[in-house]
Length: 447
Ligand code: PHE
Ligand code: NA
Image (tube, rainbow, N blue to C red; front, side, top):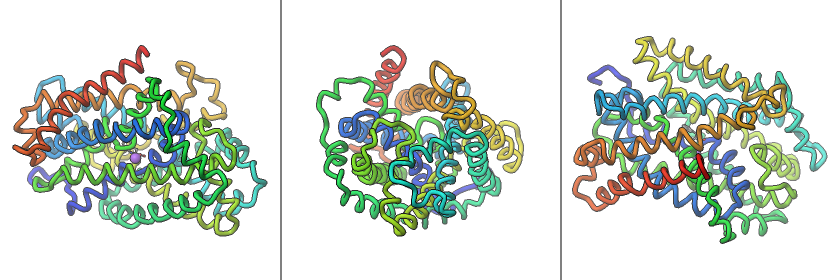
């Protein structure tokens, strides 16, 4: 700790934190509604391609920037390329992570509310088909969504405030495997439902005409960045707490594979239920909050127990992702304003919570009519980040590692010097990823 910065205790601690950042609402809530809106199987195929062709190379690039830069996302770019415009990548990262966290807290608040409602029995034993109304009434309220958002953000802020790395590492070590087990059990149950066949073909049998629609590619890239926590400095910040010895490529591979498995199992859990309960897969962000409670309800008492476990574990997964999002700003504010971790956490935490309130009130609540570019506040912030600032951040990162940095330095940092994998990686970062991202940005802007 030559420069007095904090460090991970072990390599496993780092990998768990990175997996904790990656696995979150993106795999369950966001993956299912985006896949549902984008036609299912065609989307899944393109998404998996994006994960391996763009996501994995960019993740490795972020790990190398952070570990070599040894600073927050802006500081890392600054340390590696002083006085060069690459630092824009860092600034974009701070802005994007801040915007994402503002609405991430809102959705995580919904999760907490469902946990609470199954615990108290308020969501137990309703008439089949009425969960849509139950959900709509809650998110359309005024006090409710804001209260649960603030409660969730209070957990995030208190963990980052105390910097309890032990706590984060431990929580990930225990709760991630539990979440995996619950998801697999629920997916198994879903496969016994009447709509299982239809659900599986929706998810795995592509409609080939869908590939002609450029919008699918754009959603797939946006989802790939979101789900791997890329393009906004979370992975740069986390890897900046790494000692020199850690091998980066295996860590990156592990994160990508686990994150993708979580999403696919979540899909197997959700889509059979979607078709069993005749919900429209393109229903949007409410999908899991409407469909899964119907399933839990159908399962009787066991379902209530499953529901409690499920929403609890999803809340924990969201917590570890939100922590990494807040850490980007906190790490930046600490260095930039020369304040303590405590102060930086309170400043960033309160500001981002306030920014989330209009999102909490925009889904049927009092701010529903207040739209930006025709979208309610939450949807506008989500679209702005996943269609524009995330890919843009990823582009700057890829171009920097591919062209702005010396090739030897980049390869050295990953330990891939003179290897085939290293050379393949460099060309993915130099050409494939930038071309892919540029094309998507073009589609999103002018398509
Ligand atoms: N990857 C997280 C998820 O899938 C969300 C996230 C995005 C976390 C960006 C950190 C940074 O839920
Ligand atoms: Na994810």
